[in-house]
Length: 395
Image (tube, rainbow, N blue to C red; front, side):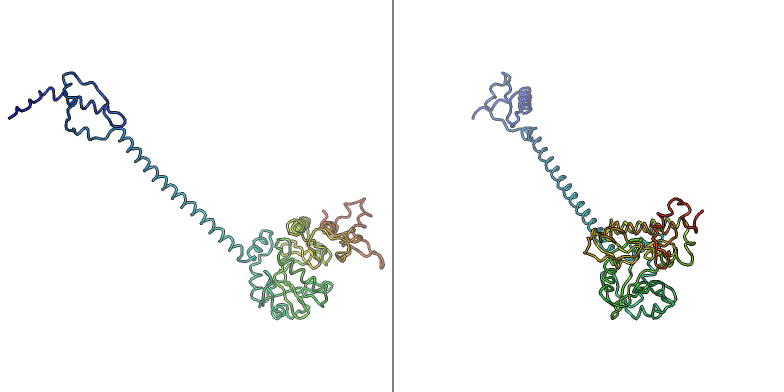
């Protein structure tokens, strides 16, 4: 029986354990132990195998670092994914909100122009259109042409008391304007075009085409129209104070128009013309601007009316259009050469300004066979301008 191995002394065991621990602590990055000098007393143990200690099973610092980096990367990618998802949801929510707001805006724009008319008229100090449109809607309408309702003839006949003379508000060359009432309250003016012919039909269609798409506080509003056999009718908002011509040259001779009111009327006309010339596309030339076509509401807000002769476009050469207009308001270049531009309206506006300032008609009869225009009269008496001002508002 062989001799049992001699056990190592206890100090030697402690020394060997210390060497192993130091060897593991100084391991390379790849996990292999770094060479370390072995004390000479233990050189005989260099080639012997020893069982692994618990310390040898622990991961190396490099492995721990790699594991931590992988965990950090996984956490970073998770945070990045969450951020991208949340950002995408936020962007989609923003786009959806904007789309919903746009749809609501479009629907509100398409509801009815009557609200826009009412707001613009109220901003100009005019009569609100809510009651007018509600009363107009109570009449029987048969169809619509664009935004304009076609009103039944019987309804208009009833509202004007069968177009009685007592309801006449004014008259023109081939038309009469009647007051339309419902339950005893006037709410609209009905222009009845008498006769027929191409000129009458052309003016009727012109009014519908232009006023059907024009909306401005200083342009009279067309509420509807009616076709009955050869008769054509246009329904306008009611202007309680009539025309500027009636106020200036009628029985009151301008006494109801103090200076500040005349200035306001002049500015209103200028704004209406500016809209027609600069903001309509294509521009509109009225071609028959005069004091009888300037209507005044209950607060003396002025509105341009009667677009029967109006044309679309900036320049019209001679031969393209028949010279039309009212004596005293027609621009010289248009009368002589047939050249029609926006300046023709500006000239007529200047004549209206002279009417407001001087209180005179554009053309006055001086003798049975002789007339004098307001421009010619002004040239004759230009030496004493203070005496030319209308006596009704002179201080």
